[in-house]
Length: 146
Image 1 (cartoon, rainbow, N blue to C red):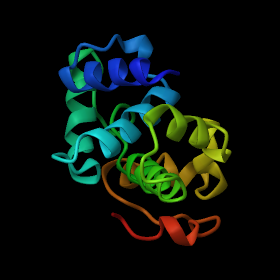
Image 2: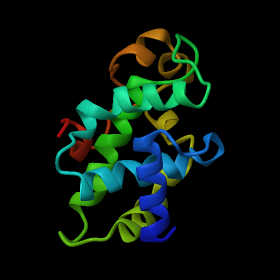
Image 3: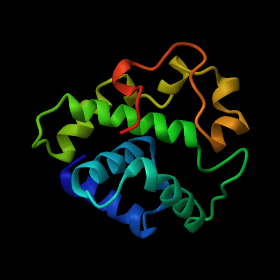
């Protein structure tokens, strides 16, 4: 994905104009990284929950106990994205940051299941709030929210 494609996805997400089919696993991370690198006025850990929920509704989705926004996955993903960024040069472009992240174990959609059992991660509790992993602890660089 180019820097321009990442910006199109991220700005479309923010404006709630991004097509639903474009909101993929890769697009989630592209948007998070773009926000971290290009929008210092936003705090993704604080702001993305509401942004994702509003986006979901704007494309006809719902945010319920079984679908839509998921707090634990969002916060874990943001922690992981920050850790990837911390390992890159300070002047990294979104394209390079996304490539590094997607080349890591985070590139697969099932990466959270290395840390959480399916039952725990898909619980209402995990969807509504942060729950700690039950299979193994998160890497030290992910332990604290930014």
